Length: 203
Length: 71
Image 1 (cartoon, each protein chain N blue to C red):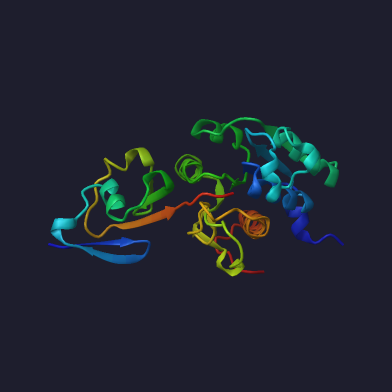
Image 2 (cartoon, rainbow over the protein chains, first blue to last red):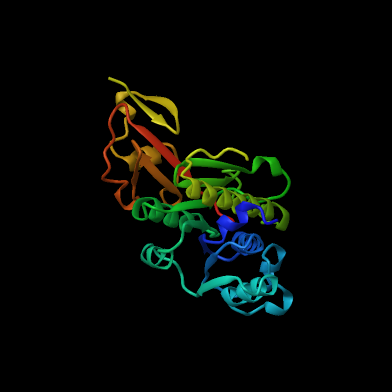
């Protein structure tokens, strides 16, 4: 028997802003849970250096991340509903491209871009929930990566302090911990929206 | 008279000589990069473009959501 959660997720729409270490992993998890539709946005191509943490393959180097992601997701589930956009997101395009999304995943790399999309969603898109990530660089310290609701429309994942920098790389395992926190928080937010709950406890 | 501002839930006292006029001054005082923070004053989001002209008052509650790079 299919658990009821999967029926509920079938009508959900999730926007994914950025298809790097976070977005490529979040998209895969959501497709495996058969989320209704994903809106995938990225302006970049796959590079060799991305393979250390992003869900691409060696033979996809040079391809648009949007195209490579859609190809990979359709291999997992050929009926997945996927919409791709090869654009750089701005406060204007965020509002138009994600107009039909229930929840938006902030999966950018740069801190100023994270700021830009969170500010845009909170100030201009009053019916949307955003799940953002801050603090995932380095390795180990898995349990310092946490999911925290900041308010009813912003859920923040990460340790809050570990930025990437000299000697502090992004690694597949720790980025993966954060990405799966993010995907799990998205499912929780979608279920809360369905049931009109504001509290987010374990269930 | 000293001010109390609640910053991320923690009350902080500011003597008259160090009271921040605007939100931008508070961020400078706290050494927070304006490009990487989302700010809420008394539950209202303040867009980054308005940090300089958002004046603060005693008793306000300020949430600062800071971002670091990596994804």
